[in-house]
Length: 529
Image: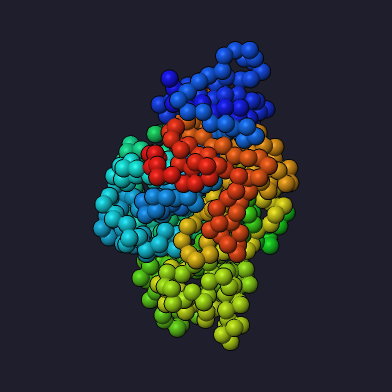
């Protein structure tokens, strides 16, 4: 007799088609049968060792987070309710061109410091890997949810070239090609870039094109955080479309937003650009989170020249008065490339986390608010924070536009990605709330998407991009990565004031046919691979 029958569920199967009522049988980690009520009226109902009454609940494929920063959190925190409680059964790691494989002893320390704001300092995790394959093997010892990995192009460049702003030599480019090929052979699904972060931003298009050719040869995709989400956003999107078409590589645009005042109401221009490319045969998808503020590190706002050479070089420049004044001018007057070509507006920059608890007074305040309270200039406050906290502060950047968010999430190639940074005292609520917010706020309350459309955006569409033949749909023979939620109550609990509050209305989540959330509580199951 099979293990489990989920009885009387309203199945939203991930295809985008209308829901139907059914009994769904799970055994051995897979969906073994689906008995639809209408089609099988009068037939004997399936039985199993356990029955779960799903009356009033929607059964859907598990949600796929196409942009996650849980690279260390999955290892540090086996509970991982931040994602599991949302119904997320798969996260895509290695984002924005910086992560922890492939590395050597030198670059591991550099990367740890560079992205401490995303993942913490990392000294509480035993990094016993160096290659992509070894990192994936470490995850396979047991994690809360499934994971896929993108080779981080900035980390690859740091390993082969360093943190300098220069072109790679032919030998260094060959080394980068080799590293990308090895990562793909060892199980990565593609490559990411952070083209407003060092050292990835120093790569010219020709270099990126060569690496994308390698990715494409293994059936992977390219996921860039492109060169501007502000003053040059449309040009930056067009650059990535042209680059990947030249390389013959599928493109997935990371957190595809149109931010800052210069882009208010301009989402239709982006979507027209993408539609033209799609109609011409381009292979493009994108992800977004359902919020207007962004989130990054404070140091990321600095001009790229100030970050050349890596974290220790940045700290030396900040400590030097004359150089610090040049940085300030780039930030506040001309608009730095780190701030997307737009002069920084300190009233939009909210400190969301610090590494040193002694600096907690800054958290939850904008830089401008702290400056006024201290009788200092905003730059003086930002500089002091960066120096005292050794580049660790994370920020919320309140620069988005609701009309752009809604327009982009309706698009035919849209998928969901939290861009969830789990560090800091007050992280962005998207880390804990992205997927229930789509279902509660944008489906039930606003009707921006139908329930069936939204579930397809969060399940089958990303599974197709990842090349997963047996996930993303409720189908016989598919893996039993499933979520049961109440469409009347599902919602994000997280807010900007209380960002770590878990969602409501998601009582059951299964990974590989095993409950990681049961009766609304996290179990001790570590079924992720």
